[in-house]
Length: 97
Image 1 (cartoon, rainbow, N blue to C red):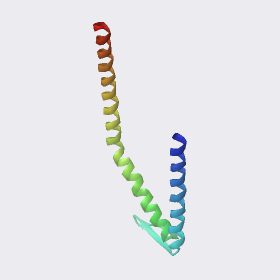
Image 2: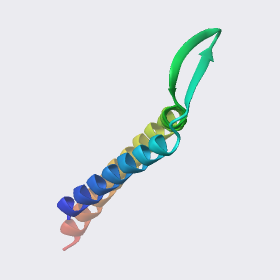
Image 3: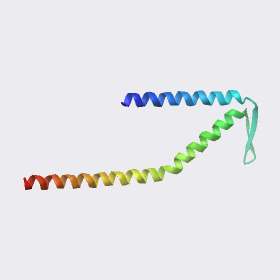
Image 4: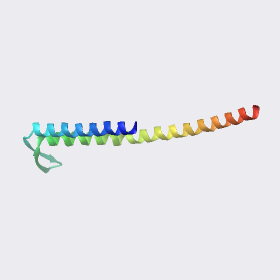
């Protein structure tokens, strides 16, 4: 099952790269961007588009990371508490039997 999941992830990565190449090749016009008054140099407009989308995805992941870590910690603590309860219940059942 893990192998199948890895193959799907590999397939998705290859498709993402091919889609990115298609966007860059479909938009070859050079475009010069300025960031805080500094020119960043001419690059194809498709590449600027991919950089913008990639940066937005990365920032979105970073913004959601604290909430994700908080939820994972809560789930870990709840699982730990559940394991303790199950252990105490099984000990009570063994004493009663």
